[in-house]
Amino acid sequence: MAFVMLVTGSASGIGRYVAEHYYRAGHRVVFADLSAPKLERICAELPAQDGAAALPVAFDVRDERAWERVIADTVDRWGQLDVLCNIAGYLQVDALLDVPTTAVHAHLDINAKGVIFGTLVAARQMRRQPAGGHIINVASLAGIAAVPGLALYTASKFAVRGFSLAAAQELAPHNVAVTVICPDAVQTPMLDLQVHRQEAALTFSGGRILRVEEVAAAIEEARRRRPLEMTLPRRRGWLAKLTSLYPSLTPLLAPYLQRRGQQRQAKLQRKSHDATCLTSSDAE
Image (cartoon, rainbow, N blue to C red; front, side):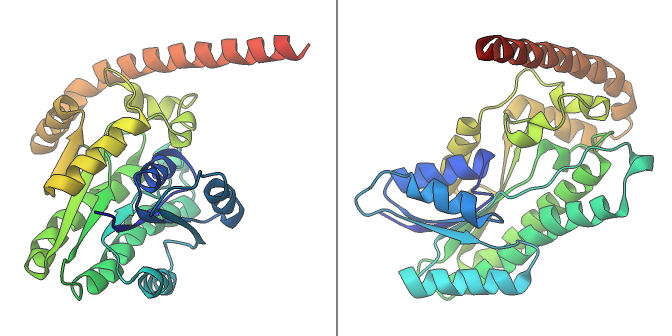
């Protein structure tokens, strides 16, 4: 059965893949992000699909009034909002003592407050719907285990996870489900920002980099089962929860994971360099 979904962060990475996937599956999808030109181009390039609709909507997730307007417009157009996927995110890599004040605001405003505003406004609409609704918030394993080198990102994702777990309990009686998904590193433009930054070495310490398709598959599983929380991959999720339960383990494990992450970064840097050289050679 077709449903109405709003996906933030739809101009790139996980958000774009998820929004396009559900459009191609025949659903009505609001493609939401900051850039109107990008969204319009993405939606214009989608093939015609029976029963499906793609609506590009540019707005800032930090703006509560914008959330109210977008969800009201969605309901006016299609009569309901069944699923909200909060995927939009922000990351600036800086050593903690070098972090500018603007980065503090951006991490908490976009990653945390943006999710909170979206959840609140969507839930108020969903509780009025006979079928209720489902809110899926994408956090990170950094929202379970603290990541030295990404302190602000960690803080914002801890907020997303904590808020989602608490909100799920409060909203359940209103037939509104909340799921928080915590993936490890995913191959997206946000990951590319970290490849050459020593502070982000722990991001690359896992066994492999996840693909956006894997996160999209987890979102679909969450949509069907409505669990409280999902981690990707599960083994890294358990490691994250262990270090969260026993924070004193982090200083013991961090040096090993740091070296492992640096080795992965070095491989990715060489791969990037080789690809650049190949492109330059082709251009000549």
